[in-house]
Image 1 (cartoon, rainbow, N blue to C red):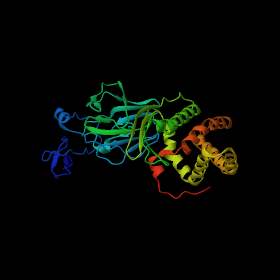
Image 2 (image 1 turned 180 degrees about the horizontal axis):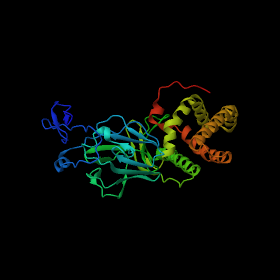
Image 3 (image 1 turned 90 degrees about the vertical axis):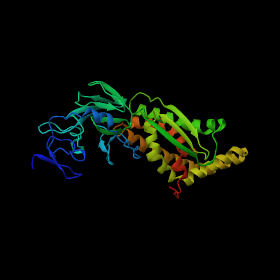
Image 4 (image 1 turned 90 degrees about the horizontal axis):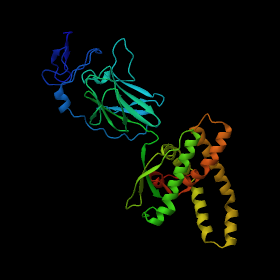
Length: 354
């Protein structure tokens, strides 16, 4: 029975040309890579629903994560890959960047060269390459050879095979979930907005602008999309255009602060005491705290230096010094603000000194 296909569900033998089992209707896996694309029946296009995928919790940084519907692990594409050919392998031809052959692409009507994704700093675009069964972006069928802008999490359908792509660009949207370490149940009043939240967001913008200059690209336009305050004092700020500084806050800032929380709290207490003290007491407090302030500044300079080198490893010494000076004030404002990402502010971790 070499010219028959065995159904994996009911074990029925089917003619080699069948794409569905004659008995139970289960899709039949192609035995060999097919050169001809099967046309998907119109009735399937109208009745087959592609299930939703939950947004992944992991961040892909500059990589693109592609989830095939029904699969739990993503296909990861490095940032250096700017043109992504999607299709299926055929003997004697080059393998597509995303080869859908293992996912029964032939049965679902995927062409050998079905679609192309173009990636750049300014956006991600999808193009149908004149496929047999068409390409859909969410619910819209694409006109062949025309570019369509994608957003992270969009559903792509090639014939009847679905996938979702997750990626970040300079215009990606993020939600900052913030909590005040000193006033954990503080409500969002106009005074609090001016005194705490506004300085934090201004420092965020200044840091991103300096990073853009360091990387020699146009300054990002940071836009506040929404601000929502919850009853427990948590403030959620949805913004766009702050990709690099948000990444640093999520990956580097929390660890640095946790290792120095004792010193940070001491300096905060001294600052509070200075506000209400008489001039003589103020001078005494400043003199007493000077060694601690000097040590913290040295550690902060070292931290900014490490961040700048990670962002621009090939930058010269002069450039490093210039941008360290530019980033120091906003980094200091962000690191020492009582307003911090919710998980970091609530973390029950024993800090260390040093």
